Every structure is written in structure tokens, then in C-alpha cells.
Length: 381
Image (tube, rainbow, N blue to C red; front, side, top):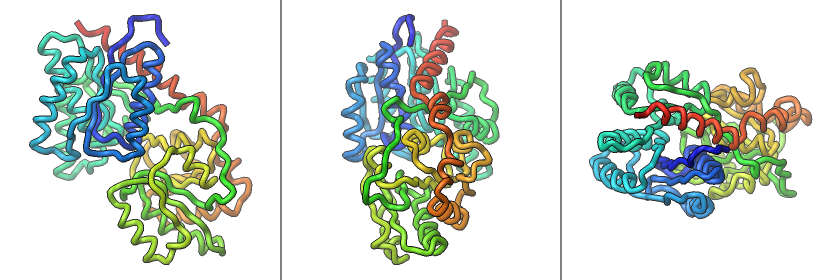
């Protein structure tokens, strides 16, 4: 990837689940293969056996190690202790690049990076929102406080990278045009994620894969599933795959709607393993930035139905019939029924595999990120 001196890169984020974790894992792997030294600092209180397995897979690429310590989701007094501990750990690693992901990771990376700069360390401070604080309403008191904090933290930022144009536009609308240098670098997925996944012999009709929390819309999937059955005119089979804080609530919802025998639930598993459970994936999120599950599904040549949120229209096309209004159960059910009853719907609506791969490759993402790191490092004195 480069003939220049290797970089020492440390990524900071809170919870090792979901898209942020995937983004960091892919960057770490690609940059490590290019000769850079990479480390991760994240929360120790979240994650499951699935995430533990993912850490085991990524450890060979973390020459600067893995540091886990308690980092609360909301602002808490324990944050001060976390910052102090993080400062000691990161200082010992002597990074060239500190990259914070998400709101909490962005605070940790930029505050610690600024403390190191005050000690005359040459370290560049980067921030990627990944949605995060941008989910707050602009007019709400909490949102105003968060966006004011974002504005203040820009003064401690050498570069911001957004994962899609939507995320950048949302930041500019809610916070303002960044005072620091900013760029857009699309999420990308690795070569092993490309290739058709054929459904199993006992595959279900409709599949949800993701975190079990309302923001991701499992409740919408369940409601729309019931309506899609009515539209199709026959019993359907569905599957919900994932872990999260609202799991029990969705189990009760399934039972209350009389769908206990037709919608099953399984814990989180590797995406391509889950994709073998069905040929139709439903992503009913209420909000997103640039969700990896969409990229992974398209790389696996799945039929996709998704909410028109975040950067998803940048992947499928703004006018794609596979997109539905967020929170609209009837539109979602209509799309489900259409995908099930029109044999050529997948061919007509999904992007061509070659064109998709040329835009959303982890190799491209990592190369562009390295170029961004080096350009900003070159401005430091």
C-alpha cells in the first residue's frame, strides 16, 4: 500500500459491536498487512461470545495490542478515570495517529491526543462520527449540548472522516461545517466477504440480522412480516438473528402477534453464516450512517429491502424500489411481498456485483484513509 515509513495507529471507540467495530477491524487488518502497527482501545463491559471470537480473529493484526477498560455509554463520573487510564496506555504506545470512532471514542482520542501534543508528542487526532451523536435532535436540549461539545472538540481535531455523504451533510446541518479538514471515505469490505451465498435447503422467507434495539427496527420487521403474510396469502417463515438489550421485548412481540411458530430468533453469528438462512434480507433501521450489513448482503448477492436512511441510498441508488420510508410498516410489508412474489425483482433492483465491488472494497477504504492520515501528519510541526 505504501513505500513510506510505517505508521503507529491506535483506534479508540466504545462498544465492540456493530458497524464501528467492523470498520475498525477492517482498517486494522488492511493497515497491518501494509506494514503499519495498529492497536485498539475500547470498552470492556459490552460484547458477547461472538465479539470475543472476532477479537481473536483480529489479534494477529494488533501489534500495538488490545486495551479494554470500562467506558460508559452516557456521560458519567467514571469517564475521568477512563481517560486517565487511557492516557497512560496510549502514551506508552507512542502513536502517530489516534483515531476516535463514535462520540465517546472521539472524545477519548482527541482529548488524549491533545494532552500528548501538549507534551510535544507528534500525533495526529482523527474523528469519525459513525452516526453517534448525530442521532440527537437538533432542537432538543440534549442535542444542543452534544453539538456544542462537537464544535468545541473540532479545535482538537486534525481531520474528520465521514463514512458517507449523508453523514457529512447531517453533521453540517446539526453542528456546522467542520472547521478542521474533513473528507468522505466510504466503508469497504474485505475480499473474503464477496461471493454469492446460496440459501440453505430449509431457508426462511425473510431475514433480519442486526442489533436487537429499536433504532435498528426489529419491531418493524415483526409487524411488517405479519402484514406481508396477508399480502402474499400464505404462511411465511422468518428469522431474527442478533443480540441486544431489547431481545426479550421482541420475543414477547412475536408471541403476542401469534407468530411464535413462524419467526424464530437466533443469537448473533458471522454475517455470511446468517445469509445462508434466507435469500431476502430486511434492514428496517430507523437511522443509520453507512451500515455494514447492507454492504455485506450485497457482496453476498442477497436480495435486500432497506429503509431510506443514512448512506443506504448512496449504495442502492436514491430511487431504488428496494428502499422504503423509515418506520413505515405498510411500505415495508409491500416490499417484502413484492420480493417474494416477483421472480425478477432481485435482478432488477440490486446493483451489479462488479460495479459494487469497485466502490466498496476495504482495500480502497484503507488506502484512502492512509493517504488522509499522511496528509494531515505532514502539516504537524
